Length: 206
Image (cartoon, rainbow, N blue to C red; front, side, top):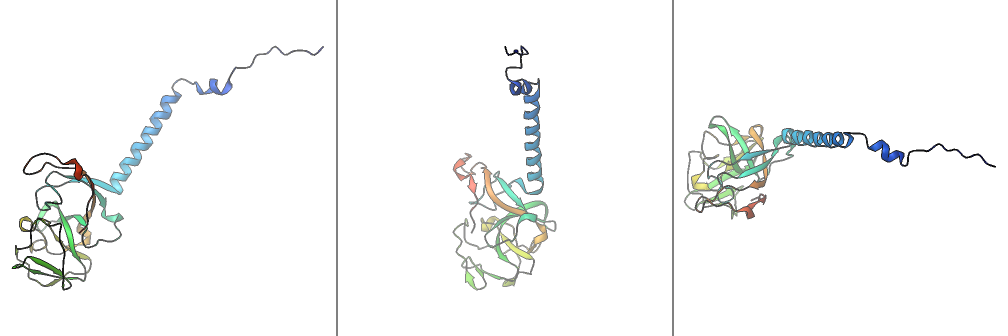
């Protein structure tokens, strides 16, 4: 007669091992901490949130809009039509948001009577602007943008202080904080004071 071993094993060893008190909570906290660290690193080195102040970029941007901005170190190249955040301390300590109209080596000219902007002799088709460009702010044209710089203008042309103003002029690329790529949260409309959440999305290039 075969001998029987009456020693009883745990019904489910794997299940018993996983039932250590607090283990699930530990795993959850560790995952949350990892996610938070990734978010902090992304918003420190890759992107940042910035707010729009003023109406110099209407109708593209409104006062109070919140933008997602790719940090300048990750922008391979700034191109005509990009919306950028810049610093120009000869004008203001606060960052300014404008659109790139011309880049280094290009020649910009403005017919203030007709309100037309030319780059390298070609009239720009600017269906994003709030009005034609009639305001002369002191910079003489034609002007060739120095290499390593960009010429910036606001979309609300006659209510924008930008590279037409000698205190700003062409902006060195090193003074660019980054490129605005996404409207995250809309500011209130200047007339209705309502927020148009349909504006949320990728920012349109010129």
